[in-house]
Image (tube, rainbow, N blue to C red; front, side, top):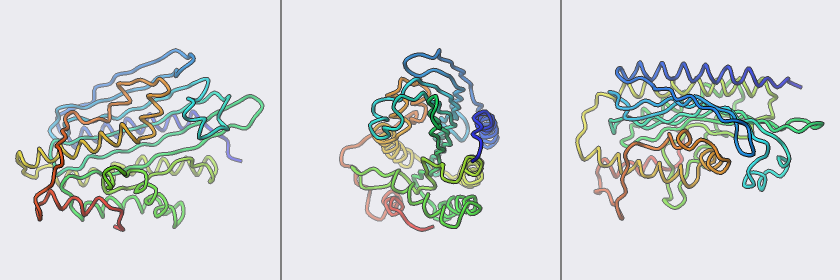
Length: 304
């Protein structure tokens, strides 16, 4: 049985946050991440801390954040133990890196990535642990070649872990990032996985390393390709409208957001993923045959 090395996971996550921030600053060319380090004393609710890093008003990125957190608790929220009763009576730790980048240019997609580790322990019993994470892409004016490239990177990084992994985790992503009240996916998907422990600690850890490092390999070439594309007020208003879908998903369905808020997590860091501006419009219908109407063709699961 593999030895569970919590410190190795934490060291990797801190390094991953540092590396991703440097890469995003380079592609932006102007803005830098401002760091907000925080800490909470252990108590009935969450203790621990983290490093929240936020970029605003860049040349490429209107706003985005790359967060590291390592929180502890004496007991799981009731909402969690209702689904996982075996966690009742256990103290837990959760650590991870989570990021969302919202670009200025509507032709550059919004992107999200997350890798995380959870462990719940009780004296005299074996620990319960798992990894989770993934990345997904949310374009406003999608290009098929960008979507294919995004998924090709995802598939390549999955291949060393089994021929079926990409298909399973892609399908999981399509299912997870789905807005049932809109009957559409949040974007064009990518990878999503949770409760990953069946490979043993070391192999599962290697997989989240590959996913975490694969995010910028998949995203930055798309940013470079689209960041100079000219756009006008029409495209900007459509981008803001579609950002509303992002807000709807994060506040209604996202597990991480719900867990953080219900367990007393740090609200500013949890809601960092929200776009700086968004709008809603009653019964919006894109003009038939327009570029805006074409987006709907991409908001269904498909093979890339």
